[in-house]
Amino acid sequence: MGVTVTSRALDLLGAFDGEHRSLSLTDLARRAGLPLATAHRLVAELHRWGALAREPNGEYVIGRRIWQLGLLAPVQSGLRQAASPFLHDLYGTTLATVHLAVRDGLEVLYVERLAGHVSVPVVSRVGSRLPMHATGVGKVLLAHAPEEVRAEALRHLTRVTAYTVTQPARLLEQLRRVRAEGYATTGEEMSLGACSVAVPVRNGDVVVAALGMVVPDLRRQLPRLVSALQVAAHGIGRTLASVQWNQGLVPRPSGDQR
Image 1 (cartoon, rainbow, N blue to C red):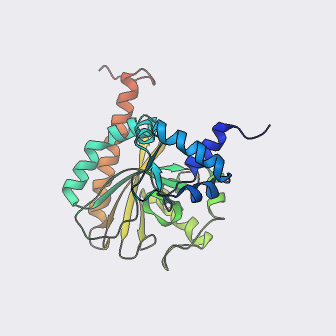
Image 2: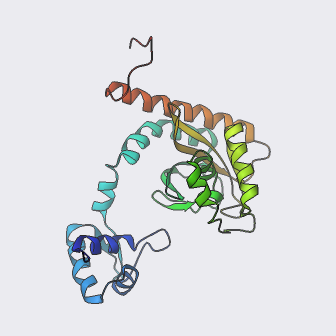
Protein backbone atom coordinates (compact mmCIF):
# COMPACT_ATOMS: atom_id res chain seq x y z
CA MET A 1 0.00 0.00 0.00
CA GLY A 2 3.01 2.27 0.20
CA VAL A 3 4.10 4.62 2.94
CA THR A 4 1.82 7.58 3.65
CA VAL A 5 2.91 11.09 4.50
CA THR A 6 1.26 10.65 7.88
CA SER A 7 3.27 7.53 8.68
CA ARG A 8 6.49 9.29 7.70
CA ALA A 9 5.66 12.25 9.93
CA LEU A 10 4.89 9.87 12.80
CA ASP A 11 8.20 8.08 12.20
CA LEU A 12 9.96 11.42 12.64
CA LEU A 13 8.17 12.08 15.93
CA GLY A 14 8.87 8.50 17.01
CA ALA A 15 12.58 9.08 16.48
CA PHE A 16 12.64 10.86 19.85
CA ASP A 17 12.85 8.88 23.07
CA GLY A 18 14.30 9.16 26.54
CA GLU A 19 17.84 8.78 25.23
CA HIS A 20 17.30 11.02 22.19
CA ARG A 21 15.53 14.19 23.32
CA SER A 22 17.37 16.45 20.88
CA LEU A 23 18.23 15.42 17.30
CA SER A 24 19.81 17.01 14.26
CA LEU A 25 18.02 16.83 10.93
CA THR A 26 20.46 14.18 9.75
CA ASP A 27 19.89 12.05 12.85
CA LEU A 28 16.13 12.49 12.52
CA ALA A 29 16.24 11.23 8.94
CA ARG A 30 18.45 8.29 9.87
CA ARG A 31 16.40 7.20 12.89
CA ALA A 32 13.14 7.56 10.96
CA GLY A 33 14.53 5.69 7.95
CA LEU A 34 13.77 8.55 5.55
CA PRO A 35 15.74 10.25 2.77
CA LEU A 36 17.25 13.50 3.99
CA ALA A 37 15.26 15.60 1.49
CA THR A 38 11.97 14.02 2.63
CA ALA A 39 12.86 14.51 6.28
CA HIS A 40 13.80 18.14 5.63
CA ARG A 41 10.40 18.88 4.08
CA LEU A 42 8.37 17.09 6.75
CA VAL A 43 10.40 18.49 9.64
CA ALA A 44 9.78 21.99 8.30
CA GLU A 45 6.03 21.33 8.28
CA LEU A 46 6.09 19.84 11.78
CA HIS A 47 8.09 22.83 12.99
CA ARG A 48 5.59 25.31 11.52
CA TRP A 49 2.69 23.46 13.16
CA GLY A 50 4.44 23.38 16.54
CA ALA A 51 5.04 19.65 16.80
CA LEU A 52 8.80 20.28 16.73
CA ALA A 53 10.88 23.15 18.07
CA ARG A 54 14.36 24.14 16.98
CA GLU A 55 17.12 24.73 19.49
CA PRO A 56 19.79 27.46 19.09
CA ASN A 57 22.30 24.77 18.07
CA GLY A 58 20.08 23.76 15.16
CA GLU A 59 18.82 20.50 16.67
CA TYR A 60 15.13 19.67 17.02
CA VAL A 61 13.12 18.77 20.11
CA ILE A 62 9.47 17.88 20.68
CA GLY A 63 7.39 21.05 20.46
CA ARG A 64 5.02 22.57 22.96
CA ARG A 65 1.94 21.73 20.91
CA ILE A 66 2.60 18.00 21.27
CA TRP A 67 2.94 18.52 25.01
CA GLN A 68 -0.38 20.39 25.11
CA LEU A 69 -2.12 17.58 23.23
CA GLY A 70 -0.57 14.98 25.52
CA LEU A 71 -2.16 16.66 28.53
CA LEU A 72 -5.57 15.89 27.01
CA ALA A 73 -4.98 12.13 27.07
CA PRO A 74 -7.14 10.42 29.75
CA VAL A 75 -4.11 8.88 31.49
CA GLN A 76 -2.62 12.37 31.77
CA SER A 77 -5.64 14.46 32.64
CA GLY A 78 -7.92 12.27 34.77
CA LEU A 79 -5.28 10.28 36.61
CA ARG A 80 -2.91 13.17 37.20
CA GLN A 81 -5.74 15.41 38.41
CA ALA A 82 -7.01 12.78 40.82
CA ALA A 83 -3.53 12.01 42.13
CA SER A 84 -2.18 15.55 42.42
CA PRO A 85 -3.21 16.41 46.02
CA PHE A 86 -2.09 13.02 47.32
CA LEU A 87 1.29 13.29 45.59
CA HIS A 88 1.84 16.70 47.11
CA ASP A 89 0.92 15.38 50.55
CA LEU A 90 3.45 12.55 50.18
CA TYR A 91 6.11 14.93 48.98
CA GLY A 92 5.46 17.36 51.82
CA THR A 93 5.57 14.60 54.42
CA THR A 94 8.64 12.71 53.21
CA LEU A 95 10.59 15.19 51.01
CA ALA A 96 11.32 12.16 48.84
CA THR A 97 10.91 11.95 45.08
CA VAL A 98 7.37 10.75 44.35
CA HIS A 99 6.37 8.91 41.17
CA LEU A 100 3.05 8.14 39.50
CA ALA A 101 3.36 5.70 36.62
CA VAL A 102 1.36 3.48 34.28
CA ARG A 103 2.30 0.53 32.09
CA ASP A 104 2.93 1.20 28.41
CA GLY A 105 3.63 -2.10 26.69
CA LEU A 106 6.71 -3.60 28.33
CA GLU A 107 7.81 -0.31 29.88
CA VAL A 108 6.72 1.91 32.73
CA LEU A 109 5.58 5.38 31.68
CA TYR A 110 6.01 8.15 34.24
CA VAL A 111 3.00 10.48 34.17
CA GLU A 112 3.93 12.59 37.20
CA ARG A 113 6.96 13.22 39.36
CA LEU A 114 7.61 15.47 42.32
CA ALA A 115 11.32 15.83 42.99
CA GLY A 116 12.36 15.70 46.62
CA HIS A 117 15.19 17.35 48.49
CA VAL A 118 16.82 14.06 49.46
CA SER A 119 20.06 13.69 47.52
CA VAL A 120 19.19 10.61 45.50
CA PRO A 121 20.03 10.07 41.83
CA VAL A 122 16.79 9.77 39.85
CA VAL A 123 16.76 9.14 36.10
CA SER A 124 12.99 9.31 35.59
CA ARG A 125 11.21 12.31 34.11
CA VAL A 126 7.58 12.99 33.31
CA GLY A 127 6.97 11.26 29.99
CA SER A 128 10.01 9.02 30.23
CA ARG A 129 9.86 5.23 29.92
CA LEU A 130 11.98 2.79 31.89
CA PRO A 131 12.13 -1.02 32.11
CA MET A 132 9.53 -2.45 34.44
CA HIS A 133 11.77 -5.07 36.02
CA ALA A 134 14.27 -2.48 37.31
CA THR A 135 11.88 -0.01 38.99
CA GLY A 136 9.57 -0.18 41.98
CA VAL A 137 6.53 1.19 40.13
CA GLY A 138 7.39 -1.10 37.22
CA LYS A 139 7.45 -4.22 39.38
CA VAL A 140 4.03 -3.32 40.78
CA LEU A 141 2.61 -2.91 37.29
CA LEU A 142 4.31 -6.05 36.01
CA ALA A 143 3.02 -8.08 38.95
CA HIS A 144 -0.55 -7.12 38.04
CA ALA A 145 -0.15 -7.26 34.26
CA PRO A 146 -1.68 -10.00 32.09
CA GLU A 147 0.25 -13.27 32.04
CA GLU A 148 1.32 -12.80 28.42
CA VAL A 149 2.88 -9.43 29.31
CA ARG A 150 4.90 -10.99 32.14
CA ALA A 151 6.04 -13.79 29.85
CA GLU A 152 7.22 -11.31 27.25
CA ALA A 153 8.92 -9.12 29.86
CA LEU A 154 10.89 -12.11 31.16
CA ARG A 155 12.49 -12.39 27.73
CA HIS A 156 13.85 -8.83 27.96
CA LEU A 157 15.52 -8.59 31.36
CA THR A 158 18.31 -6.18 30.55
CA ARG A 159 20.92 -5.32 33.17
CA VAL A 160 20.95 -1.63 34.11
CA THR A 161 23.21 -1.83 37.17
CA ALA A 162 25.05 -4.63 38.90
CA TYR A 163 22.00 -5.03 41.17
CA THR A 164 19.33 -5.33 38.47
CA VAL A 165 17.41 -8.60 38.72
CA THR A 166 17.85 -10.43 35.42
CA GLN A 167 17.09 -14.00 36.53
CA PRO A 168 13.51 -14.90 35.45
CA ALA A 169 12.86 -17.24 38.38
CA ARG A 170 14.01 -14.65 40.92
CA LEU A 171 11.91 -11.91 39.34
CA LEU A 172 8.82 -14.14 39.24
CA GLU A 173 9.23 -14.81 42.97
CA GLN A 174 9.50 -11.07 43.61
CA LEU A 175 6.33 -10.44 41.60
CA ARG A 176 4.51 -13.13 43.58
CA ARG A 177 5.50 -11.36 46.79
CA VAL A 178 4.35 -8.01 45.36
CA ARG A 179 0.87 -9.45 44.83
CA ALA A 180 0.86 -11.07 48.28
CA GLU A 181 2.34 -8.17 50.29
CA GLY A 182 0.89 -5.24 48.34
CA TYR A 183 4.13 -3.39 47.60
CA ALA A 184 7.38 -3.65 45.64
CA THR A 185 10.91 -2.52 46.43
CA THR A 186 14.16 -2.08 44.55
CA GLY A 187 17.71 -1.57 45.75
CA GLU A 188 19.96 0.30 43.35
CA GLU A 189 18.52 -1.64 40.41
CA MET A 190 17.91 1.41 38.23
CA SER A 191 20.38 3.91 39.71
CA LEU A 192 23.25 3.37 42.12
CA GLY A 193 22.50 4.94 45.48
CA ALA A 194 18.73 4.92 44.96
CA CYS A 195 16.14 2.58 46.47
CA SER A 196 12.43 2.64 45.74
CA VAL A 197 9.16 1.40 47.13
CA ALA A 198 5.84 1.38 45.29
CA VAL A 199 2.21 0.27 45.69
CA PRO A 200 -0.65 -0.29 43.24
CA VAL A 201 -3.35 2.30 42.54
CA ARG A 202 -6.69 0.59 41.96
CA ASN A 203 -9.86 1.76 40.32
CA GLY A 204 -12.25 -0.80 41.71
CA ASP A 205 -10.53 -4.15 41.32
CA VAL A 206 -8.30 -3.05 38.46
CA VAL A 207 -4.73 -1.81 38.98
CA VAL A 208 -4.55 1.33 36.82
CA ALA A 209 -1.27 2.84 38.02
CA ALA A 210 1.56 2.57 40.52
CA LEU A 211 2.60 5.08 43.14
CA GLY A 212 6.18 5.09 44.39
CA MET A 213 8.95 6.92 46.19
CA VAL A 214 12.73 6.97 45.78
CA VAL A 215 14.95 7.25 48.86
CA PRO A 216 18.60 6.55 49.75
CA ASP A 217 17.79 3.63 52.09
CA LEU A 218 14.67 1.61 52.88
CA ARG A 219 15.84 -0.45 55.83
CA ARG A 220 14.64 1.78 58.67
CA GLN A 221 11.61 3.43 57.09
CA LEU A 222 10.00 0.80 54.87
CA PRO A 223 6.85 0.22 57.00
CA ARG A 224 6.24 3.97 57.32
CA LEU A 225 6.69 4.61 53.60
CA VAL A 226 4.51 1.67 52.58
CA SER A 227 1.75 2.87 54.90
CA ALA A 228 1.91 6.41 53.55
CA LEU A 229 1.87 5.19 49.96
CA GLN A 230 -1.07 2.86 50.55
CA VAL A 231 -3.14 5.62 52.16
CA ALA A 232 -2.41 7.90 49.21
CA ALA A 233 -3.09 5.17 46.64
CA HIS A 234 -6.42 4.41 48.31
CA GLY A 235 -7.33 8.10 48.16
CA ILE A 236 -6.45 8.30 44.47
CA GLY A 237 -8.57 5.24 43.76
CA ARG A 238 -11.56 6.68 45.62
CA THR A 239 -11.21 9.95 43.72
CA LEU A 240 -11.12 8.14 40.37
CA ALA A 241 -14.21 6.15 41.30
CA SER A 242 -16.02 9.29 42.49
CA VAL A 243 -15.32 11.06 39.21
CA GLN A 244 -16.71 8.11 37.29
CA TRP A 245 -19.84 8.00 39.45
CA ASN A 246 -20.43 11.72 38.98
CA GLN A 247 -20.03 11.35 35.22
CA GLY A 248 -22.38 8.38 35.15
CA LEU A 249 -19.71 6.06 33.77
CA VAL A 250 -20.23 3.41 36.45
CA PRO A 251 -23.16 2.69 38.82
CA ARG A 252 -22.92 3.83 42.41
CA PRO A 253 -22.29 1.15 45.02
CA SER A 254 -25.41 -0.27 46.62
CA GLY A 255 -26.63 1.99 49.42
CA ASP A 256 -24.69 5.07 48.25
CA GLN A 257 -27.22 7.94 48.33
CA ARG A 258 -24.88 10.82 47.58
